Length: 213
Image 1 (cartoon, rainbow, N blue to C red):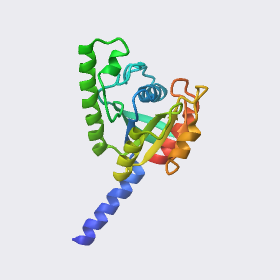
Image 2 (tube, rainbow, N blue to C red):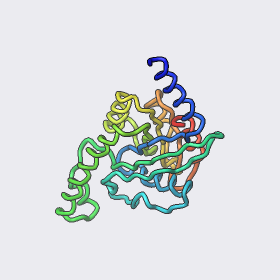
Image 3 (cartoon, rainbow, N blue to C red):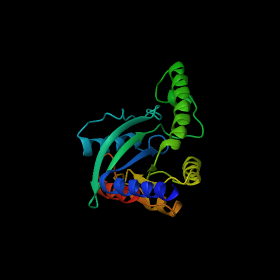
Image 4 (cartoon, one colour):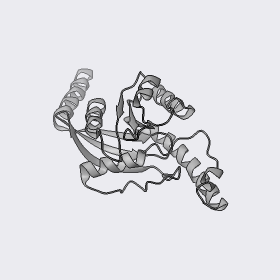
């Protein structure tokens, strides 16, 4: 019975390898305003033609306060095809103060409501890690990468042994420095892009295919 069971399992794995599409569920993580939703919308537009359905892009931090999932995006790169389920998550933060929303002109009541929703969103994003095959960690390449949030997120993902690809976003800005991100986290692959302009986006798709395919 042991031999038959083992043979059946191996045969099933062989059939799946030949006939099933590669599929991965990938989460977009990172601090607020790093460009996660902009990147999610870019990926969606490039591979399905849909415009901006992941969410609204705003200068106000924590605009995305609930995880949003899109299934079945087919990406072709490096001669291979991978089917992705993309999850755009709320911005990760170690502390969320309602006063930061008031600085953008929101009322105190609305600011406190947003702060509560943003805190719940961070908790939801952490829970999503249990159900993902890999992570795109989006960083703003104009900012200091060695922050408590980035170090905490990377440490969490390494502890979970999740495949991780760092996206150095906003390379189109004059003060961008993707090399600082590479120096801060040399143990992980870093791909510089501009999600807004689409610069170097093909390199990201090739890296996704190589990392998660």
